[in-house]
Image (tube, rainbow, N blue to C red; front, side, top):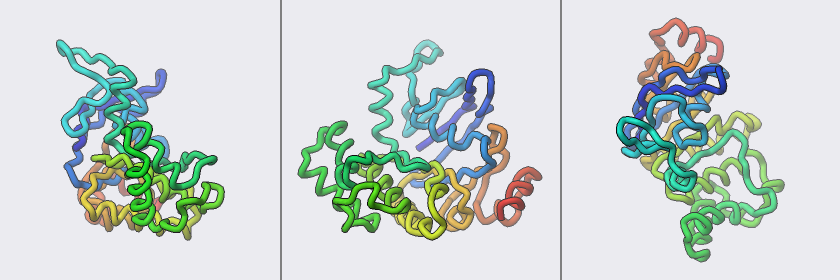
Length: 250
């Protein structure tokens, strides 16, 4: 589903990704871990072309993301074409980014109606199904200010799913939540993983990574330091830098 080939990303003269190569199979759940500033969130943003790669190539489901290739050179896609690619990639951010003046239901139906040109009645029915799926069937008419952080994040997940994505990206989806609200969001993500959704999750929730992920990838300094089965990596990391990181957070 994802193939990254020597992906580099600089912000000005500062390199953030320094040649990341990895693959994510269809239906796989991959968790990205690493210290702050290691390039985890930047990698996610490059996957759906919110950030442009400086070098290398990123493919999603066989399509080169953000560019077309001709004569060995890359040419950036028109923003409309890039947006069309992005429709198939759901992204859930650390902060929920819900429209504050719209109800939970209205937040979810907006993109399917505006972007996919879905009939409103169909979009509303689907939104109600998704709200039920994330355990918020009774919150359709609530505004974000009337919801807890965990509830807002579950609405954000439902909103991403409303576009029927082939891939879901989660950028530290629980880090802005009070500890007692984390479990409900992780439960929704577990159910999503069990349904076969391809997922890349930037997280510090090692219990979730151990239980749900098929693969764990440790990024540091913009490079993949180590990757492997979550249980093996968490219990017996092979690289000294991985050991240092895990001993500091576990």
